[in-house]
Length: 302
Image (cartoon, rainbow, N blue to C red; front, top):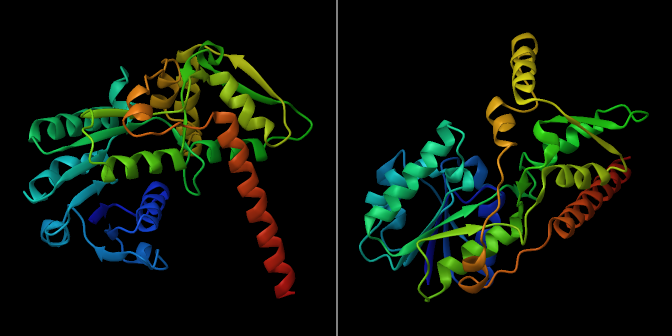
């Protein structure tokens, strides 16, 4: 089976391509950047193509049996006219941001992409992952760990957050997201048009933060702070320092419960996602292995 993977060079995309190649499929991986295709999985064909240059992508998709789009949800509407009528299944990736009640551009774009996909009549499904962690370039757990690493060792990590972090979250490991996409793209079974890809159960935001901070051997002290004050602090930091650890939209969304039903993920795609504790431990082990490898390389150079 020939499968085209659009937007294949990110954390999720690289894993999807590897898993598809492992299964013996013929894979064409695309990116809009030639540099990102350097040192890519040699088992896959590669092509520089993008929805922003329709002719390049249309040529890649022309003879694909199935198509997977892992690019930003904003590309879904532009991708749909390029899908050939011979395509057996189209899998597009959105985000659970589409369920957020906090108005922002990313949420609106994802909802628009979902609506376009559901209206197009093409066979397939849109997968909405929750907060993805465990990759090499994701900005969720890694951003928090960067803040912890810069925190004074003698002081417990102080974390201001609305409502004391009582909101529910359901983060999902990057490998479980990749496995879900591969299953959706390769199965011949009928799928629900919309499938949420999330961890096995929701946890409190405060609990998630404590588990992350604990991987550095640190203690976390949650500081309940009213949302308006945190927003004011964010604006001041942006004004005087040009940046803030978390955006106003992120602060507002930290009050929302993000609890999702994953029955379709388990029964239709056969995915039993790992717990956050398990995934975080695997992430920690990988970080340690990378650190040891880096130390070994430095020793050889000396």
